[in-house]
Amino acid sequence: MSTVGCLILDFDGTLTLVDEEAGPFIKAFREGLSLRLGEDLSERWEAIAARIEAQPDRYGWEHEGYIVAPAHADPYVLARSIGQILLEEAGFPPSKRHALLDELYLASYPHAKTVFRPEAQAFLEACVASGLPVYVVSNTGGERIKAKLENIVPHLLHAIGIKGNARKFVIAPPDHLHPDWRPLWEALPATCSIPGLTRAIHLHRGHYFALLTQIWDETRLSPEETLVCGDIFELDLAMPAQLGAQVHLVFRPQTAEHEKRAARSARGGGASPTLKGLFERLDLPG
Ligand SMILES: [Mg+2]
Image (cartoon, rainbow, N blue to C red; front, side, top):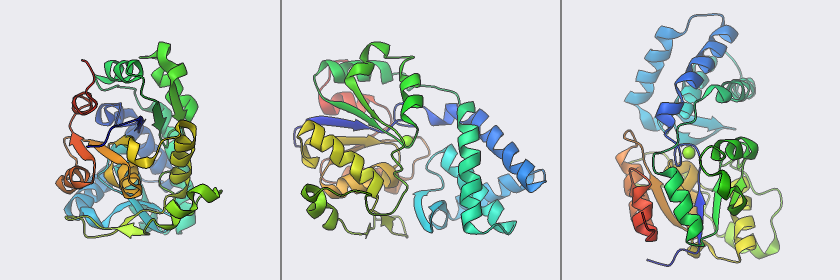
């Protein structure tokens, strides 16, 4: 396996335990949606969750007509996927559905608890001590990530590059594409498929691509020298793997087998249920 010269970490679900955090978020999200629709959603919510579970490939987080992550990726994505179906059935057109779900998501996210993985602090300390450049690249806002990291590694904030609002879910070209990175973008196929998933995975995630290339410009490293870690293969890892980066899936008990397989079979790929797998992979003490 190639040497790792730079580490890029997703935040929610990768450094944190989303299933323990999301309860109050789900409650707020569901109440907000219930108010908008003027009905008690308790029964329909569960029925739609069961429908999604029965046909997981058919549903997902939709953004501008594309499924960008599987519905069962984490509790946040599941809530959003259920919300999409409820609004669709209530007759809301796609643009209104997305705007309303974005609004509900932003209003509900502050309710989520912060529960770091038990080994997150030691892991970040060991990574920084090893001299590896460490970045957090997440859809969550940078200030919010910083405030959360302050709880466990206030002494390391200066050493961790935080890039929030990564918009990994946007399927579009980057806003600005430096000529140096044009060949890499142009060589990126629009989609890929993985065994076990019947729909294609979209790879043209231009905002995410721009942030990754920014990091490669800052570190003067290549995709091949970078390890990208995330908890959702489709959202966090599929594009970086295609760009040549090494990838590692930190999975949940509910993560689909095909996602773990895809992460493990990528070149320079790996997967583990906790961050301990990364200690081993990076040969970190602890
Ligand atoms: Mg995540």
